[in-house]
Length: 125
Image 1 (cartoon, rainbow, N blue to C red):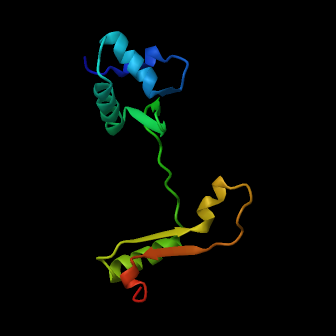
Image 2: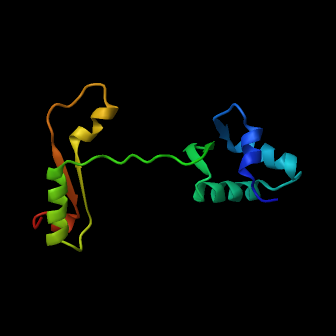
Image 3: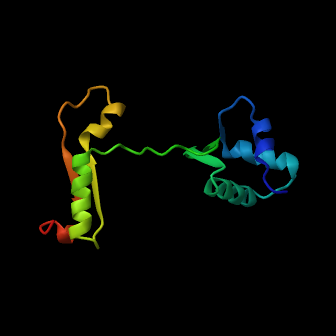
């Protein structure tokens, strides 16, 4: 039996989150004696295909998550473009402290920009 998402949604009508054990019970009702490893592989497959979302250790939710994508200012975008142009073969990461304001109780009223580059090219960048 292949996984049917509608059947799983019907099995958990009011629970938004469910555990690996609950999924095992679901499969065990449909296929008595199913090995735990088979259920684990099916869970892995569902997470990998975006049908299940892992929200904790052994806790899942139906559907995909919306990853956080910060809005970068024009200034930090220019810095990133300049680094990409001048040092096209390095890995780097840029971000601004103001991005975390939406997650914090005490807002930051000044902006610090961070540029994280590989250790070997710090001085050059």
